[in-house]
Length: 172
Image (tube, rainbow, N blue to C red):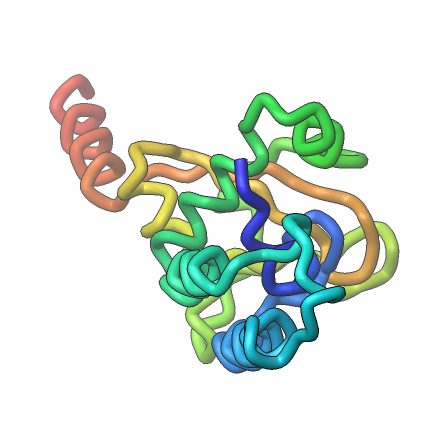
């Protein structure tokens, strides 16, 4: 499996707590094009270990599209690559329900403090939930912004909750 993050010389989601912005990805893409363009290199610099322009374009295409990037990140973690399996281990993983997190109406996100002292160490956005729901999932894995701990946040869709409430009230 081609590592698009390495192609663009970017940290993978497991290597960095910081979220990459669209501008970060675009800048890395431009730098990679300049660095590896055949016209910018001498004959001694050309090696088969360096990414081709097509590989760089493909990496940018995947990482710059939010849905493709989310799918790629998941595939990267679940790949048969032993190094990817090793990196998919999450220190201090705890399972919680979305209802256990505080909701910030201004930001439209849920958060929870971490034992490292970060008040909003774990943040779950509506986009995280929607992306996971589109894939048929009912939980998201979230890393703390301040340390290497992780939580698994379980959730259900609003429609499921409404059906459960109606069925519960009919049984009573």
